[in-house]
Length: 411
Image (cartoon, rainbow, N blue to C red; front, top):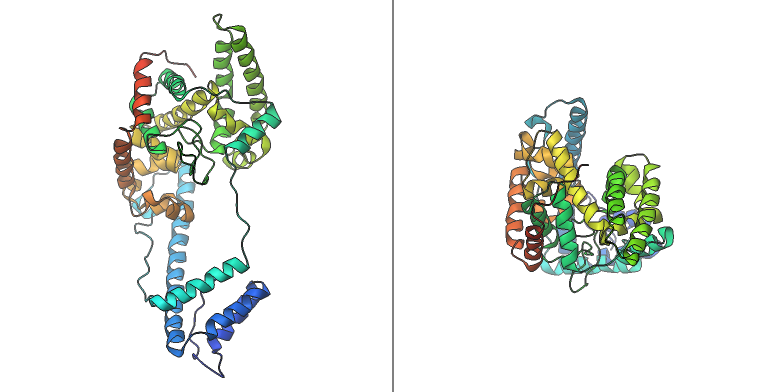
């Protein structure tokens, strides 16, 4: 329910003007069932409770106005930086909001009144429930892959997947330190290659909070983007595997099918404009969802996820950063490539993190709250150092040791 500014007398003929005003707003904005509940709540308040409620509501509205003004300023500054980046103009400190979002410092409802108001809001939600927004989960991606491409990802053991991932990453010039620390941060050092964000990798409990899959937690649009960018390379590498004379007949037949699937997927994405907004939308369609299932295939998943990290490294090199730590690579992965680079140096490193995240994303990702760009990088490094000792991280590190010296792949 939207907050209302209140300066009217508390009571009239048994029903306050405040109550009538609130009821009228709710009657216009909500189903009829809610209007009666609103009146019931307001008329249930004593005179003192009504006065306290009005003071609190006014303070909350003032705070919301301040918060809106803050995020409006952040967005204006972000728009200016986008224009400057397009023109190659360096940023200055004046291009950032150099403070954090305001915090509410006004009065609070008493315990009893707060509980009463909470019960009212709960009744409102129960009477007028919003339809749940269900995110696609791994079974949905697998079903789309099967339906659209007749593709069922090949499952291998965790140890084998790590070995193949390490080989692909080493071939692309990525270091053990970079890849394992990203894995440690993204999965807590225990994630499986079919891990989806929000679902416990071992217990399989929880609820999906995004489309992010795998060791590198690629979003569905990341999978589409990377296939569009590097699909020709993936086809070449998979063709080399197919042509290996040591392949037994079953393996050769499987790789032949994977090649046909990969070529069809690549042809599909190449017909789409290479634009992030387009790729985000396409990733939500059945053909795009099927592409996301590549992440858990024993041959294609390691290629796709390792190449995503290599792409970030290449973008950094173009910007003059030829060497990235695991935390720097993850900063680009978390905030977006160009935004991550922006947070590493210059005025962006001292700017508060709200400058780099959308309003909702800032509050949802608790790790970024209250930090500057430099502090967020340090926090990523700290969390990586903790998770690097967990079993999955150790197994991944061992996999890199097993494939050390692997030949670099030309992109």
